[in-house]
Image (cartoon, rainbow, N blue to C red; front, top):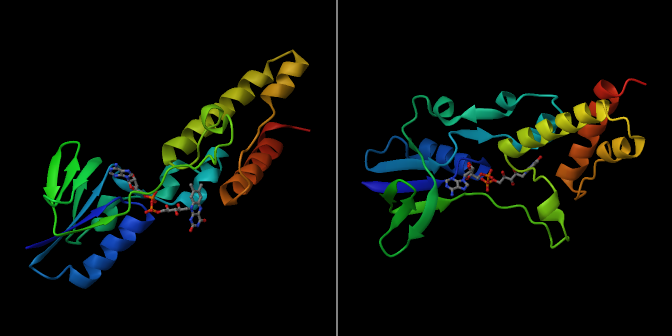
Length: 187
Ligand SMILES: Cc1cc2nc3c(=O)[nH]c(=O)nc-3n(C[C@H](O)[C@H](O)[C@H](O)COP(=O)(O)OP(=O)(O)OC[C@H]3O[C@@H](n4cnc5c(N)ncnc54)[C@H](O)[C@@H]3O)c2cc1C
């Protein structure tokens, strides 16, 4: 049996597993296994819309089991903690899994480009959890600012700084602007 292990259920991992499935899924001598620490795949381009409460988390995820349906690949929900190239095993937090081939699609981490304070004082926006935490924090701040009588403090509470002007930063800025001016501030 040829064992192919795909690590990560994001854009890369899902594309890999579905392509492998469509090309090799019918072969009896091939086993395809997807390993991920989350049991869904996330459509990241809409994360800023979660922050602005425009959509709900369930709108931008699709569960692996829903994608899998009658396909043959196996899904293991676990965290990859290492890969032993000599023994040809992927180490998981609950055991290990042997492979003949593996594909790594475990994503990346936020690059703060050494901007002082950015990592310590900002909220990241990379995962579903990040977006929900940021949304809750913003709503919390807005509700506290609502009954703050000190005008200077209120202004500080209502000042949002977005670090990074790439796709995510610009999208988040416009989403927040729409949310605050359309739904929060009644002029
Ligand atoms: C807010 C935002 C908006 C974006 N908009 C766009 C866009 O419009 N167009 C575009 O092309 N790209 C966009 N991107 C970038 C895009 O999301 C990434 O390039 C893409 O997700 C990378 O795919 P990936 O499979 O490498 O990693 P990811 O999609 O991040 O997937 C990584 C997977 O690995 C899993 N994983 C991580 N660590 C472990 C572990 N130790 N054990 C087990 N599983 C693990 C994760 O749970 C996840 O399933 C955006 C990103 C963000 C954050």
